[in-house]
Image (cartoon, rainbow, N blue to C red; front, side, top):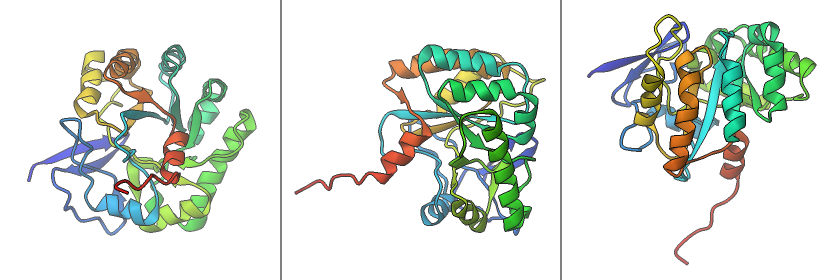
Length: 263
């Protein structure tokens, strides 16, 4: 079986080409077989875990919508341009920030909220949630939420993206108890190596190759390629009939009962 490696910031998350892998004793690392032919990726047992314990990685409605999400651990000078493009194209996004990001780039966090985007919780110190106690996880989430509330009008948070993509059934349920929804992703690629950027066309193609209805796209704002590719990507996906929605709309849609057909 051929194994692909997807590295989330500084940690390796294994992506297997078949959904039959076994979790480590410490927990799971979010991974999947990349999607092709406009189909969602194969997530294997992880899909069942989310079904039973809560959490999202895509919109299962089949609608031609996509959800842009960005992880912000530190600033490299490209987030401003990304925000400019989102504003120009009238596209909502969610930015999952850490405590370091809030401390070092408060003006950008303020702008995210001012521009109508959602700021999500990526923890304060970016620890592996599977190594924390319930109280330790609570402290991470509450500290980050408080830091954002102190500098923006956004006083609460609803979405959490676990650092390194690691989780357990227990950590998902702990987050649920604190009012959080785990938000994983269905499209991603190695985009955070700032000294190994390959040009905007490469980033653009990575997303286009995996695109599918209901995609939750993960991008890192430290990538110059992503900043340069974003407008091309948005414009071309709109031409393909895709619309861009916020995570709030995804969760709301999931709560609305769909009509039963055939009667």
